[in-house]
Image 1 (spheres, rainbow, N blue to C red):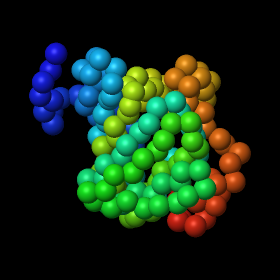
Image 2: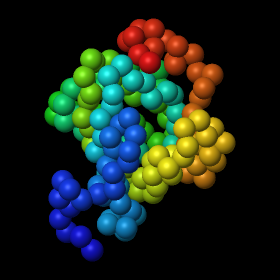
Image 3: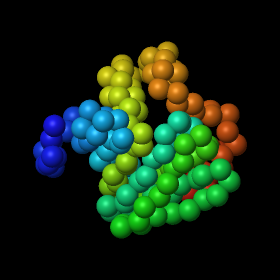
Image 4: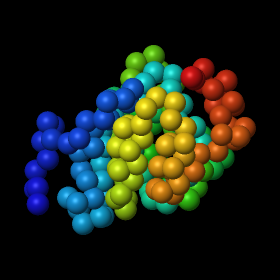
Length: 155
């Protein structure tokens, strides 16, 4: 069992978010997992829901979050909650990447990040399968997607 996780430890995911899984379910007996990542400029993670809480700590930049019908923004040193079983979205409205740490509790969905990272570009069936198995549901028809893109000039 690791008692210190250094900045060089973890499983890097080679994607646009430069994510690194630093704490795994196996490190914490399933209590939590943690990822460090960069939300690219003008990037929207569309409305979705999952069965764990995700706390986001902002290291640099700013992130926006939609939780239910509420919109908020969090800057460096702030924590933001994306609660389980509540539709939420996250974005970076800035012109530079926003560095964050996500704490997943309970753990387990760090494997979802790894699985979708391993998919070929455009593998919609593989993405849908990973989402189904990890009980993550995206709402492609949400009116919030267009509204957030328009309001904050997002991709």
